Image (cartoon, rainbow, N blue to C red; front, top):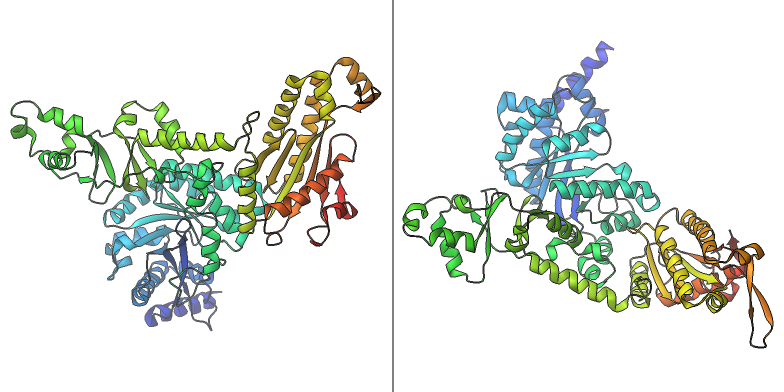
Length: 606
C-alpha cells in the first residue's frame, strides 16, 4: 500500500512540474437572452494515467497532501487558456475551501494570479472529499477579502447535502448551482420541480442568481426555463471541450426564445412571467463619495428625475436620495455652505426597498403593501445579481398590474374568471411550438341541462363554479393550465407527471361535493325526472363529471385545432361511461391518420 501511495505522490509531482493538465470549458448560458454568460473551467489529467479523471486526480491530491499544488496548477492553466482563447463572459473556477484558506495563509491571492480581471472570475466552492472542518466563519472571512478584490462566489451542487445550504445562509454568494440530480428528469418529477421552485424563492430573497447544472434534454431545458432559472449548463447546451464555441447552438436558442419574456408578456395568463425588469428605469446612480452639491446639480439638470440611487464603488446600492428631501435640506440659509461638500450619504434613505429584477410584479406588490408607504412614493431599487440595475416606481407597478387585469378580464369567462378560448388556444399553440409534451384533458358535466331545468339557473351556475374550483385544485399552477371553454366545458393542459392521479382526485372530489346540490329524494333515487318535448317523463342520473384525456407527444401536432378535435373525441367516449369517468386515448399518438371517431378502438377506460 505504501508503494502505491509513493507512486501516486511521484505522479502528482511530475504533473505539477510538467504542468501536464488539459483545460476544458463548458458554457454556462443566460436563459433569458440565450447568450453565453461564462464557462466552467474543468481539467483532465494525463490521458495514459490513472489520474486522468478529475475525481481520481483530486482524491489522490488530498491523500498525498498536494491539494493546494494541484488546484493552483489547475487555476493557472485554466486562466491562461481562457485568456488565450479570448472566451467571453465569466470564468467559473472550482476551488476547495482547504486550498482557498491555505492560499490566504501562504501566498495572498497567488491562487488566481494572472492577467485576468478578478471581476470576470467566479470562485465556485466545491468539496473534493469529506467536508473540511473549517467553519463558515473562517471561510466567510477569507472570501470577504476575495470579494473586495473583485471576485464573485458561487456554491456548487446545491441540494447535495445540508452543509451547502448552511454555507448559502452564511456566505450569501452571488450564484448557487443546483445539483444535477434535481435537474435530471425534472420534466417528469413534480417533487424536483417543487425543490427548484423553493430554491428560486430563496434566491430571490437573497439576491442570488441560480444556475441549473446537468441539463441534458430539450424538455429539461424547457421546464427550467419556464420556472425562471437564470442560467443553465449541461450536455444539451454543450459538452466540455478544449476549444468551446462562443455562440449558443441554434436549437438551444430556439428552445429558449420560444418561452421568451416578450411572449410571456403578451400572454395575459402568464402573469408570473412579468417581472421587475419590465418596469425598471435605468437611471444612472451616484457614488457614495459624491457631494450633496453634485447630486443637487443632477436634480437641477434633470427636472423629471425624482429619485437617485446611491451605490458603492462595486455597484452595490446602499440608499436612495429623493428630490424633495435634498431640496428641503438646502432651502434654508447657509445650508449650501454647511452641507454642500459633505458626502451625499448624509441625506439618503439608508433603508430603501430592494427587489431582484426576476421578482414578479405580484411579489413586488405584496412587498409594497407590507412595507412603509414611503417606498410607494419614492420608488425602490431593482437589483441584478445583487448590484444596482435601476429604479422602479409604484405608479409604474400599478399601471402594469392594471393592464394585466384588463387584458385578463377581456378574455376571462365571466362566471368562473378562468381563461377563455383565446388564451386557451394561445397556450396550447405555445406548447406545440416549443415541442413540450403535455396531456390535454377535456372536462364536461353529464346531465347538466336537465339539472339546470329542474333546480334553476342559479344552482346551475353554482355547479359550474364547483367544477371550476375542483379542477383548479387538481392543477399545479406552475405547470398546468386550466381554461373554461364555455357552459359546462373545461380543458386542462397538464404538464404534471402525475396528471392521471390529479384527474382521479378531481373526479372523486366532484362526485362527493355534487351530492350537496340534490334533494334527499333525488339522492335516494340516484337521479331525477324531467318532461321531454312530448311531455313524457325521463329519468336522469345525478350530474357527474367526464374527462377525456389525450397524450400529446412533442412534434406530432402543429395546431390547437388538431388537439381540440382529438380531445373532443376522447370526451365523447368518456361521456358514454356511467358516473364520474376518465377515458384516456393512447392510440392516436401512434396513428395520427385516424379520425376522432376511431379513438375508442384503443382507448384506456379508468
